[in-house]
Amino acid sequence: MNAGEALSSYDGVTIALSKGRIFDDTAPLLKRAGIVPLADPESSRQLILPTNRPDVRLVIVRASDVPTYVQYGAADIGIAGKDVLMEHGGGGLYQPLDLRIAQCRLMVAVPRGFDYAGAIGRGARLRVATKYAVTTRNHFAEKGVHVDLIKLYGSMELAPLTGLADVIVDLVSSGNTLKANHLEAVEEIARISARLVVNVAAWKLDRARIAPIVEAFEAGLEDSA
Ligand code: AMP
Image (cartoon, rainbow, N blue to C red; front, top):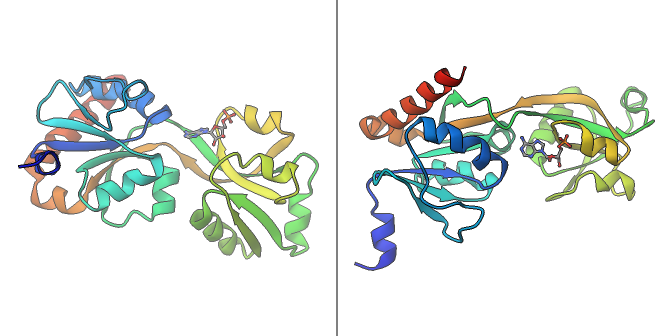
């Protein structure tokens, strides 16, 4: 058996999550669920992190890839922001728990002084820069507003400052990033928090293996409430 086979034949529970904010906020929840990673994803180059429990491991992936890993069963469980789940569409995922961490809002923002309501009222065509192309398209389609979408992968705040776009759609937490870039939020698209997601097939067919982990998260949430 080679190393790849050894890893892919792992018969414990695999949890997918991303570094940074999600990992930092999830670590205390994992701990309350009795799961302690044996390496720090910020300093380790390992992408598969063993934990104190031989039957649980973590895989560290890009935030936007978490739903994909869980959907295809490469991970049984994942932790992903609602922003990422809305963009993914949620196919193949069961979403049993709102973890109430990494809370923020997905907002439409414009340069300070830009007459957003007036532009909408006039039926103007807006150029919107965002990394949330699907969610943004749906939002403006529901409002009956015509938009030209410009897909970006980061630093959305720069787009209106350089003339790339009229408005942006981005996550807002404290509002400091918008303020520092002379932007203001004008519309809320969704309230965001991180969710626990489970592969639907694993949930149906392998509940005995998965449910104790989900229940441990749930109990940890109740303890902290
Ligand atoms: P803030 O300045 O606190 O409003 O934070 C805004 C910046 O942080 C933006 O660049 C957002 O994309 C990012 N951000 C805020 N909240 C989150 C979150 N929960 N998850 C990921 N990114 C976030």
